[in-house]
Image 1: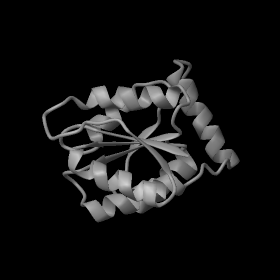
Image 2 (image 1 turned 90 degrees about the horizontal axis):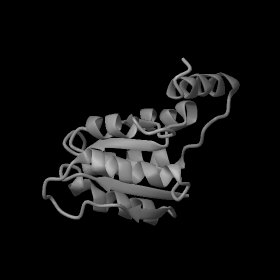
Image 3 (image 1 turned 120 degrees about the vertical axis):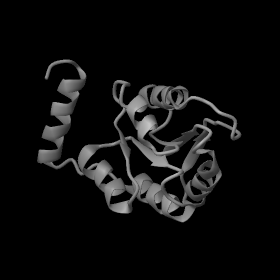
Length: 149
C-alpha cells in the first residue's frame, strides 16, 4: 500500500514522524510537502493528494493541518475522495472499515505526536469490511456525490 502524506504549515511538525512510522511498519510513502513552517494554503495540498488517489497512484492519504477540519473540507470536495478527521484510534479504523475513508485528516494543534502515530497506523492497517449494510451506505454516498441524491 502506498500512502501519501501532505501538510500545510500548521501540520508540518507531524509530517516527519508520520512518514517515519509508516515506513517502519512496511508502508510505502510519498511526501507531498510542505517542507517548512512558512504559511501555505491547505486546499492546495488536499488537491495534490486527492489527485494522486483519483489517478490510482497512491492508495490512501494523510492530510495534516492545524485542526484537520480545513483539510477534510477541501479533500471532500473532490470526487472519490472520502476524508475524515479522526483524533482517536477507534474512529480511524471505523472510518475505513465502515465508511471506506481513503484520507485521514489530523490536526497537529489538537493531538500530540504519539497519538497521531498510533492513529495513522490503525488507519493504514484497516480494511473496508464489505458488509452489505456498509456497501449499501457507501453506494448512497456515491449517489449524493454524483448529484443523484
